[in-house]
Image 1 (tube, rainbow, N blue to C red):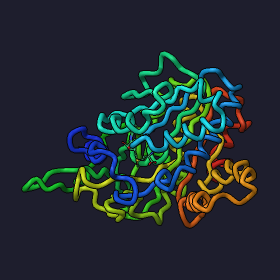
Image 2 (image 1 turned 180 degrees about the vertical axis):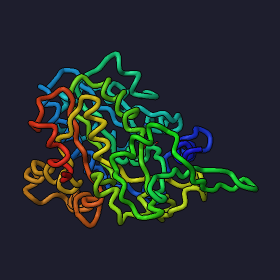
Image 3 (image 1 turned 90 degrees about the horizontal axis):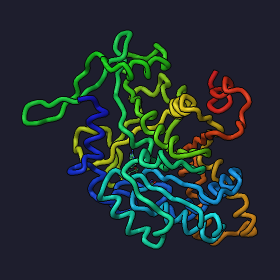
Image 4 (image 1 turned 120 degrees about the horizontal axis):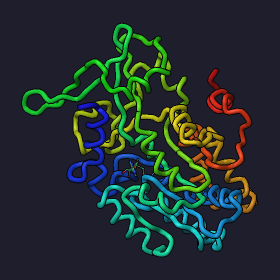
Length: 359
Ligand SMILES: C[S@@+](CC[C@H](N)C(=O)[O-])C[C@H]1O[C@@H](n2cnc3c(N)ncnc32)[C@H](O)[C@@H]1O
């Protein structure tokens, strides 16, 4: 099977997938931290960004936030609690939607969000909303890096695909073979043809399938994707010769995803240029690409002013962890995309250069 098929089963098989086992993976007692585990400030700042978008959209009576990868519902609760304090009128007309394919996680989310029965709805997929689009926002924190990816290796003058096979005693092994998937062949084309021998990397062909139903669920509005990742020229830099694929277990990073399938997280960084290109094909436009530190600091300006520059020590600690370049502020990036709104960037041809510093 392709590595993408392997990763999809290892993470999302309803019986033995890593994410189907409940919601203990994130946090101190789990396998890794995210910005959500830092504390409620992250959701509070996102709520401010969402409100700004609601205002840009003309304060619609009915609007929608779609959160992908809501995990145990903590981020949704943080956002909704903040919205209820900041702008109850906006919360009243809000349809907060969580698309969650895994029943185990959906049950946990329903429990976490039981105080918001009129606001939050759960679906298997956002495609179920396509008949009733609303203006609003779709977003996700650390979701795109969890989408299955293909693995490829440069040999001689071409890419080969690293597939997963089964050897004696059911041992999983790598098989290197010719690429016959047309989608994968065309996704590899923009990477160029200058790589060191045995350069191994990952590539996703699933961004379109992921974004398309979200686009159909929103009349107009914005998407925010927060994740580990780079612009394409950084991602596929010749020196990044073993890619970004990692496993996580008990806060330790590993590099062999075949070792304990279903028991460890598997993740690979996001090529944000590819996401912006797919968005453009779907009629959207990338308007911002920044590291999390710079992005959150701008959103936090009003909040900091309200605190007279001296927030409570616990909130200040959260802010520093989220924004400091040596913590999460430097390792995460945010891509903002808009749909059916006046464009902020006059010439789409300038997009790659303007946002990603590419020629
Ligand atoms: C690394 S966790 C991040 C959880 C949470 N957003 C946070 O920041 O703490 C990735 C989550 O994305 C979910 N996920 C992956 N693919 C998804 C998809 N296509 N639709 C919805 N959720 C998805 C996984 O089940 C998992 O809960």
